[in-house]
Length: 112
Length: 112
Image 1 (cartoon, rainbow over the protein chains, first blue to last red):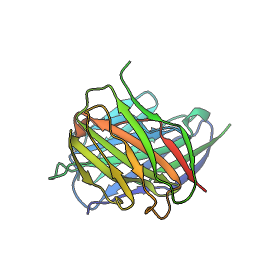
Image 2 (image 1 turned 180 degrees about the vertical axis):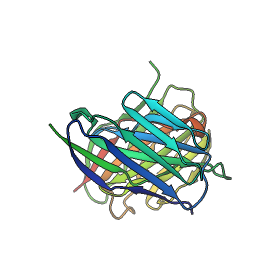
Image 3 (image 1 turned 90 degrees about the vertical axis):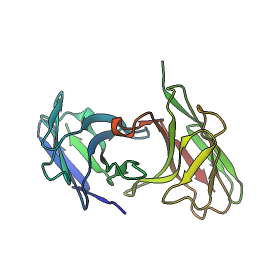
Image 4 (image 1 turned 30 degrees about the vertical axis):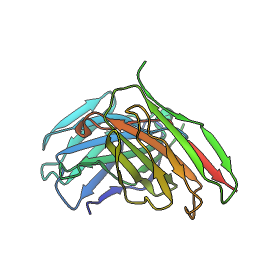
């Protein structure tokens, strides 16, 4: 089945630093989504991307839908302590089932 | 306010007992999903339902059962056949998979 490879698995950064993470797929997706999960809570949608090459921002967050449609990137600028959590990418291939496929997450820790 | 509610937040059960996790949504979403989350494993799909009175197995359905008698409700039963039931369980719903899923805040099940 379809799989997503999300990297890095974890990041330890200093407050104020920029962060980059990405997801790659073995097959093409029509939709890429990025979620953030705070400890002990459910994931919350940050950004949705629907078109190859699309670049979308949400405050300090910027995500891009790769032109090959097999990858996506999330950048966080000037990180702050409340950015800590797990970031998940998710793709939707539009196949017969069409359920979202999730990456395994990037755990972000921010040192004040 | 519309949302998706999981209860209880924490649940403790003795080994060999069945336990039912509640998931209710008032978003008028047709589709509902159950995921299991273990540290470092990401989100693994247990069951999903696209419409009332119909549901499908996900990737790790063994030892679990569900029902979908009402649009708003999608309870998950963790049976004694589930070998390793201790985990964080997330329920989600969607009206359009391309728009992403709305997640509940999760139930942490501990079996002792």
